[in-house]
Amino acid sequence: MSFDLSVWALPDGASPADVRAAVQRCRQGQHVDSYPDPRVVAFYRAITASYPDRPARPGSPWEVTPLHAAADHVAMCLFATCEDQVLLDIERLAAENGLMLFDPQDGSVYPPPTAYPASR
Image 1 (cartoon, rainbow, N blue to C red):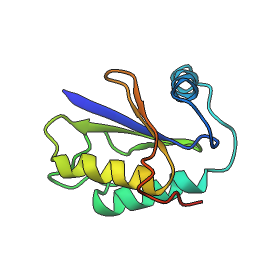
Image 2 (spheres, rainbow, N blue to C red; image 1 turned 90 degrees about the vertical axis):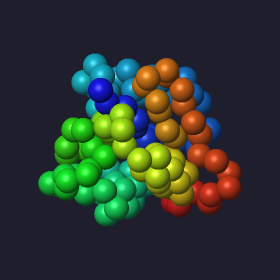
Image 3 (tube, rainbow, N blue to C red; image 1 turned 120 degrees about the horizontal axis):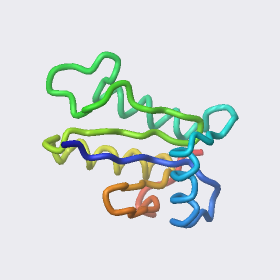
Image 4 (cartoon, rainbow, N blue to C red; image 1 turned 60 degrees about the vertical axis):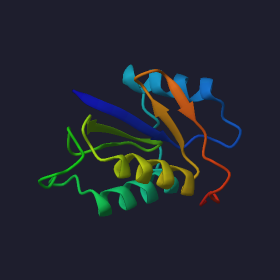
């Protein structure tokens, strides 16, 4: 059983409804046709520096590799048994990069905590 999360680079002021709408468009195959958002690139590079996805190593938190990286988001399928530190790292890196975090298990959207300055 897996645990899925995704991080989203949306414009300032985006609401949880905006994130859910972006997720729906992605699920329907409607992807943003643009250059990758630098916040997404920075997140992907940082998370895969700690937890490589190409190739995944033994003990990897990723159930599916490589991670799904698009211009405006990164989707991650984690083993349900992954260490809590992995989730904390995902949350921290999302916040550091000003990304919204989406939990498809219950549809929750978490904006970046204000404790971390957003990188732009």
